[in-house]
Image (cartoon, rainbow, N blue to C red; front, side, top):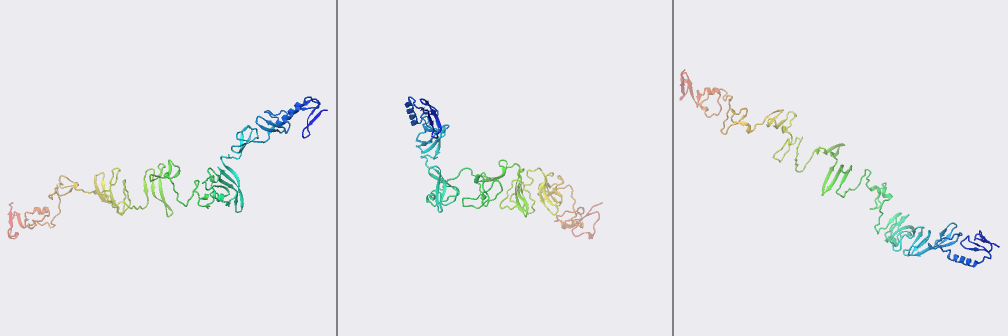
Length: 473
């Protein structure tokens, strides 16, 4: 009678007639009265003992069948479609040959790895024994109200930071003494390490400037920082701690205003070509420019009163519209310097601009000239005069060392208005006689009357001692 072979769940594996065998599974199934069944039975028992140990999987496995993969040294189970690792872990110091899903404990570092089918990947812990505790660890920290669960970041067995959703003060002296006297919501760094966050954060990349209340002397509100994208103010002094100084303008190389320092010397510069620098003030609501520098010419314009304490030294020209008296220690005052030849001198302004008084050098005439009301004449120097008016005409006369002068003709007014004859008492007079006096000098000279006449004198014509010359006709 034939055998019907069933699985555990009752499904039929095979029906075997008497005296035959069935090889539809990994084992050899034989029917009733099969001759030589002992060998096949014993081999089936061996296969079960070794879980069909082979580098090749059984050809006709049943679901749930075990197979020891000798190539990967791992036990696998058939899930109805393929053999899968049973999940057993191996503990050894060297990397084993694995199958996908295998686990391996590296006994050197006490770390567990899983095999992906192509490589071993670390499962944990993330640090080796030699690296000590490193990475995140979930812990409870006590405080006066109980405990808070936190995530601590370790490096080489030292807690560097604590991630917490609450702000609280630890009651455990261990945390307090190890750099965590206060834990804040978020990440708190170990204060004993001088630890800091390096890199970009959303808060640093977009600073919140809505508040100006500082939480401490070292934690400053965002609203108290100067902005670079908008006008801003500061209550403190600004110090630029380098000699590059202050630059105002988009183009620092050729179109900006600069304040720089070199070897202790300060330079204020407008580097824009032919651009001006002006200093303005508000005078009663009106903008005025008391000081201006013209870039195109280098000229300096001062508007308003200027008070100078000390000496004023000018190497260029000096122009003044002031009417006040000015004094100078210099021996000479030079005008019209480095200009084309033109009349130049001094002007004393009067009530009328056309009626002023002047003394100036007349370039066309080559002499000094003076006058007023647009009427000017030459100023006579000693070199312009002469003692010989006969040989050097149209010059001013001067006496020689002996007191003499010479002229071609001279017209003199009467010394004696009555025209009386020269008497003998006039011998000491230095007055110039008139022509009439000279013509009749023979009648009177030397204090006594002397007469020259064609008529004989009478007794009443003279005095004692008089001489009378009778000239015949």
